[in-house]
Length: 310
Image (cartoon, rainbow, N blue to C red; front, side, top):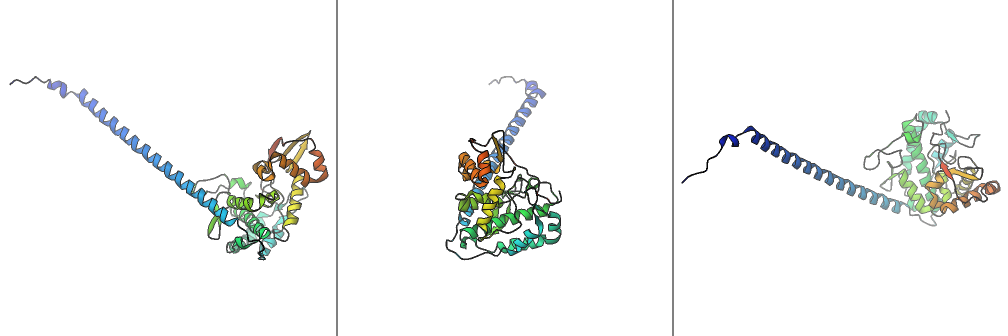
């Protein structure tokens, strides 16, 4: 039997060996890329599921904490916060109240923390509507004060970039879990959502009570909010903001308003509702300025800190 001759020099040539090596390397690289791709997809899906779970939990917490007990006579003691605000919030001749942050941090930061800790022990769902609102509005403002004091000196609350529940950094402190209420972690955004559901959807003036300690914010009062003084503060705050240039400014027949009315336009009844609200809150003079104006032309917001030392 005869066998075909084999060119051994060709089989063992360096060129063929190199080609086989390159092919093996290519397959190995492709395999690694496929593994990396699958890992990325797996992580993306995991993060998406975790994010969806966090959103669901936050929504459930908002729903649970939005409940009020009609007819309840329970009143929360806010005297500690009231004393702090009376000591460190000063009224400005320009219509903008400011905070003595340096003195507050040096002398009473721990007192503020104690007030927050005391509020965390209260069940707000056992409160009636006004007390429930006062509880969460005061907690929101106290937590905001605490965040600023912990990071002071800062030029703006926007400089304080706290992580959200997933650990991702955010633009500001609003998504960070800052307190625990009824065993549920809450952020400033959560508190805002709670009050929008339980109060602002019926009375948008509640937006004037949540303060971000910025020049563009509504008036920051040197007193705590209570169920008893809530209506007085709501009425005063609405008028003060609607009649101040940072709230509304009408020039040459065009209206420029605070971005607050853009962010929460739905709560004010839409674009037309904002105009009606400002006209009613601002009185005859503002109503006359808005006569014939059908929409707000532009919005603005000053994020500079309401620092009494500036």
